[in-house]
Image (cartoon, rainbow, N blue to C red; front, side, top):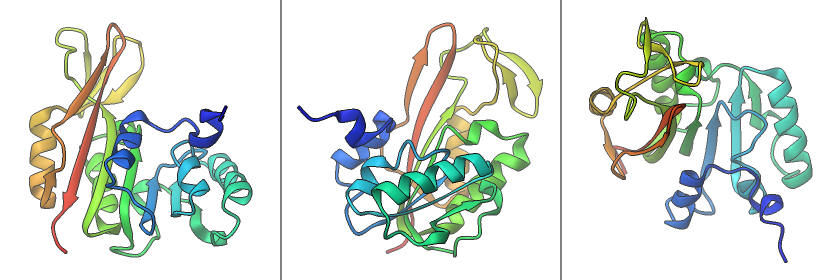
Length: 204
């Protein structure tokens, strides 16, 4: 019997859904912004995708480089870079898919959120797919303690930058992106709410 964890890693189930729908396909270049240790890249590396990523943590990049050395040794040395999402050095319009999973909700304020979002959009080619998972206010009425700048203390005690449907719609309109799927939100009762946001960039 196959070891599914070995094959797929700890891939986000909603990202896996995009794979199942064929929206992320062999031959595409996939950039993971805020990649951490590469939990969303195991399957892509195994299948020979052209993957790259950035993370501000040197330890995380060391881990994802070790993963690549084992699963995808043909990837270039600079595929994974120690740099913040808002200041990535990848070329403009160089990725077919940009993943930013559980990252945007660590924004310090509105300016930081839009800087990260804008940089992800910059590196995405026209017609490309943008996939984000981020904390939101959905289903948490009366359970959040506001700190200002759209940052809140969640019921689980963590502090996150939160969005809502209206703010995501406004951001998509400003970018010129269109929703690929309706927003999907997972509510973990008494803890947090996570929204999946998938856009298509205008163009070819």
